[in-house]
Amino acid sequence: MRRKEGVNLELRNSGIGKWKNLGGWIVMSGVALRGLGKITEFGGMSEPPREYRCCGWRTVLGTALVVGVIGFLGGRWSAKSDGRWAVVLSEIKAKQDAGVALVEARGDVALKAMNNQSGWKTYASELEQLAKTQPEQALQRALAERNLSLRAQLRLAVLRGWAATNPEAAAEWAIGRSVTEREGCFEALMAGASAQSAAAEKIALMFSARESDRAPEYTLALVDALGEVGSFRDAVKFVSELPATTQPLQAMNRAFSLWAAHDPERAAKAIDSIAEASMREEAFRGFVIGWAEADPAALAKYAVELPAGDRRVLSFANALPRWLDADPEAAAVWVRDRGTDPHPDFDPVVLAVSTNAAVTAWRPDIAASLAESISDPSLRSNTLRTLAFKWNETDPAAARRYVEGSRFLTPEEKMTLSTELVTLTK
Image (cartoon, rainbow, N blue to C red; front, side, top):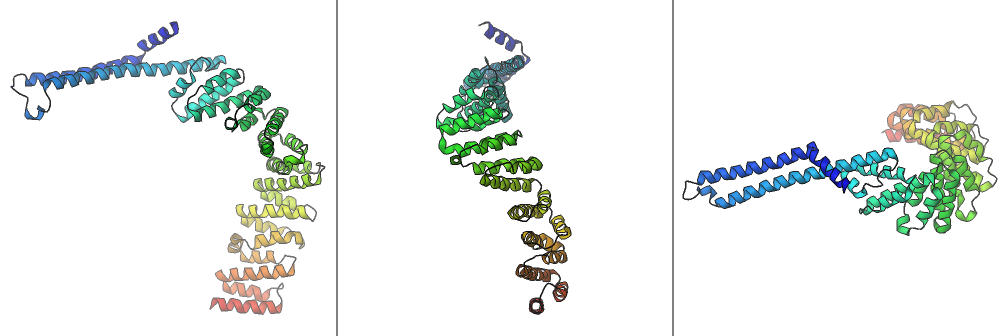
């Protein structure tokens, strides 16, 4: 009761309340005086002027009084309402400093006071912080929200905060919810507990045991969470110890893709430490995918140093398309200047670069010289033929000169191709 009197006293003394009360009195007085003025004006007449005959003087006076009273009450209510929100928000701020924000202030009132996108996000952040020390009270505030969508968001915020300090208890609570209520809970727990790798892994195992059909999904979410905080080695170790029934290959691919995007040198060294062959090769596939997305040029240069074989081919196959998308001219110059002898491993690389539309439009002569380094004779001839037709579209004379002087085409190929080019230009 004392608190309520304090609030009312503050409202009575607030500038907002005084000004809005004054506004209400002005509206009431203005309308009432106008109505009385009309009555006085018509007082000496047997009847009002024609334009006022639709209503009698009693109606005018009644309307004036009603509007005035409404204006007065509106000012009083608005002052009280604004003051209420100001008090609630000031209480939240004070309790935040003391570490017990929102414990006594009503959550739904606070949310309505923050009637915008940033407002409820701030409130969710407050609950997340509160949950680190007082999870039960934070949950009580979140679950008291009547808006179902906001309630779900607040519940997840509480789980993030709770998992940061007591991940197992937070996980136990979440697992006990219904299937619908558990939606998003695992990701929230991962976000809160990812700094504690062992705890995050235990949560993943708990959820996998509860819903075995979703075990691969939970494993991938764990890998993503550990990757967010840079715990790549922990993620790889966890996945490598999983049983085959949980489909760990996809998770291993994801772990090395994330690792290579951030630290390719350490990721490359870690690949060969994986004992199981299929897991090791899946790790390498993820490695080149992640590195190609982050730095395709660096991956291409790394691939040149690899011994001939599947890994080098796979590295080029991932690096060159992305490099060509980002900087086709630089990729073409690099392939031209690499200074290595023709090799089957490089054929797909050279083919991709030499026939790239941006490269052929930029420098068809460089595209042709690249194609000349293709080791497979049949593939080389077909590629040169394709390039000659593209070149002929922009510079027919230069295209014919190249064909006639090429040492990589047989006399028969030169004659046939030259005739076709001349026919096309007529």
